[in-house]
Image 1: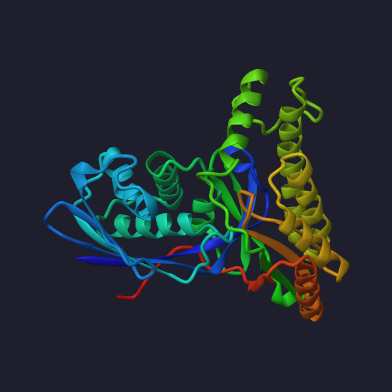
Image 2: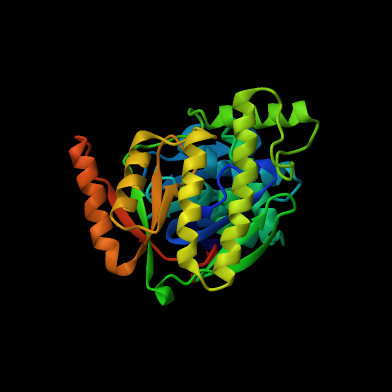
Length: 360
C-alpha cells in the first residue's frame, strides 16, 4: 500500500509571531512544496529517504524517541511518533521525500514536510483526521519530537490554504476562512526576496521570544497576549514591547482582511510596512539585510514590504505593481551590492492550493 501527498510552503501575508500567542494570522500557500510518498512495510521500521540528502535514516517504530533520530529526519519521523502517541495504528513505513522549496528562506520547508507526511499517513492508514487535526499533529512533531518551538501558523497554512486566496486563521480555536487575494487580477505582484541569511528556529532567539511571551502572560495572569487592552503593561520595558507588537499585529491582520474583502489590495501595502517596523522595533526579530531590502523596495516604488517568518534570517515580501516589479528587483540588488553583499534571489508568489493527494 502506498500514498503520496504534496504540501506547499507558505508566505504569511501578515500576522507574525501571533500564532503562539492565540492570535490571528493571514498566510497563503506558495507553488513550491514538499512531496511525501509513504509505503507500508511489515517489519516495524520507519525509513526516511530524501532526494536532497545523501543519507537514509531507519529506526524501529518502538525505538522512536524525541531526539532519536535528530537532524533533518526528525521532522518526518516525528509525525508517526505523534500519531502512535495518540493511539493511532501506525505500522512500519518507508517515507520518500522530494522538494522544490528553498530551505532556510522563511517559506516553512519543515512544516510543509510534516504536513505532507501527516496527510500521507492519514490517507494510508485511514485515520480520518481533519486538516486542523493534522496541523496539530504536524506542529507537535516539530515541537515535541524535533524540539523546535514553532507556533501552528505554518502547518495550518500548508493544510488549509486555497488557490487564489489567503486564509484567515484564528489560532485560538483553529477556525479559518478564505480571503480573496487575486494578485494577477489587480495587476499586482508579491515579490519574495530571499535575503541570503539562513535562519534556524532551533538555535535562534526565536525560542527566547516565545519564552518572553509566556512570561508576560504569566505576569498578567492571562492565557495569551491576544485580546489585551491597548497599553497593557507589565512594568518590564522589553516584555511591554512584545505585548504591543502582538496587539497591533492582530489589528493589522483585521485591517488587511477588511481591505482585501473590499477589493482594495493596494491598501495593504502600508500595513505590511507597519508590520515590519513593529517586528524590527518592538519584537526585535528583523536583521540588517531584511531592513535593507524593505527600504530599497519602497524607495523604488513598492507599495509596502516586510520580513516574513520567525526572523533572524529568511525572506522579505514586497507588494508591487507588476509594471514596477523589475525596477524594484533592480533597486534591491543595487542596494545589496552597494553594501558588498551577494545579490539576493527573487520569487514571485502566487496563492496556491494547500496539501493535496498525488495521482499514483
